[in-house]
Length: 327
Image (cartoon, rainbow, N blue to C red):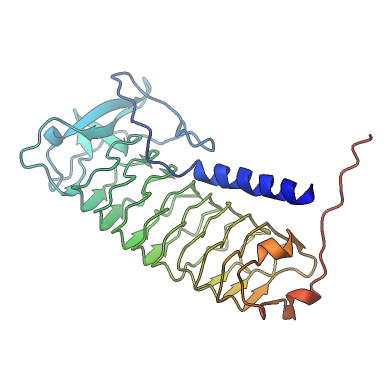
């Protein structure tokens, strides 16, 4: 019975992680003023600071190539870019997006606006921009370069998922949360700079980033999501200076090049967190750390892997007390 329960738990977790996998939903097209949510179940864009005005970048692509939608309210309005227009002749592949339209600022890229586009190779979002919605550039597999304004405050789930040629990105300094699968599947991503005010790395943010060997996690981060680094190329991870107290389910699963994890404040490690880390040599966690089943958490790791300088056979299993249901 225990074995069946474990299998069902793992299947449930797998399907939950897969929920972030697709670039599928089509963007909503509407002529109405939008104040909508980002739609990733974790955040809204209601507090976006819409600039009072903006001048168009003289180097920006012609507005004729894009579709626009009003955004904001009666007191503060701007435009979202919702995708390509019907004009194709001369359509740019290296895009400096316009920062003004109809004398109003362009504040963001709408949900799924350029999803699965195969022509874009470079994008620049100027100082009028504040947000990038869900799957805005998901599946744009030929994007190599992304230049994001420091004034962007929100990047929604799967915004750059499966941008397979993207090599580096500097996350804007005002971003405090990165949501599910933001850079998942960016297999050429070598360099990521995370902002000092970041507090949360969501589910599968760097999943499948095979070229990503190292990431400096800011001290401000307090939480990382399920499968955050799953199947990535990370070789060493240091969490000890952060506020992270838990390594969640499948966090580093399939990280074949991972050799060490320093996480002295971590008091809980989830099932499969280091599954298949075949080069893992050492893990440092709190002395009172709670583990999921060691046989699953470290399955596929070298037999001589050490936790707090001890072999797995010497690790005292600390599990949380069962809840008294009063039955």
